[in-house]
Image (cartoon, rainbow, N blue to C red):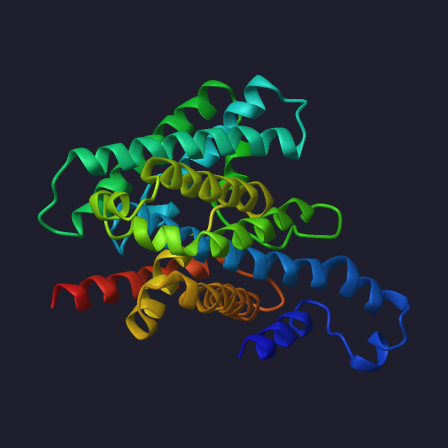
Length: 306
């Protein structure tokens, strides 16, 4: 399925590509493939892999299956960090804005974990509700800050995920996700222990606080890289880990490759859907992924409540 989706992603678009043109290794078709279609495919795969892995990490840290960057304030904090960088250091490049987003996302993650640890919830559904409220506050602060600094128009670019602006030379920072995934797999056993609770993890010799900080840092780097490149895309890190866990369990060493592949497939499918709905124009992936993910999120809540 992943291979078929990759091929479909390369062929679907406003310009029709023919295989005979591609094999010639020259002309406009080859330029379209190398400068636009292949970078877009790479960005889609890496974003899906990164966001789904982020969801797994956060779910083990908070010990709740309904947590991911969109339901814990991470995406909103990254957007706020980018807006602050635009006002404080307008001459900063992509890397500078990403560093601001990283710091804000990491700080927001720490605050969210502290809030969840301080409150005893009787229902697991209340945790993402608190996260959505927390994200709403951060989003409101971002909008107020953008309004005060007259950068509301700049803010719109980070509110909705969109891969149409991905071309060669403007997306390479997203390759930071590759070492993040490698580190996550390397520390998979430790994150699995973190999901058992602080008492159990500490009794097994794990440095709980350091592992949690590492997990939040990995999430912050991934979220900031994706938001600065393609914008905010919700629910990928929530839906895929839950579906994989229902079938294969929670051992990250075994399930992490499946989670990563599932996240990539979901984003590829949503992107192809958005490019076909109003062809030759396209619907931003933030809308398609948000709609599909929202429906699956609601179905998971109903299923778990039963």
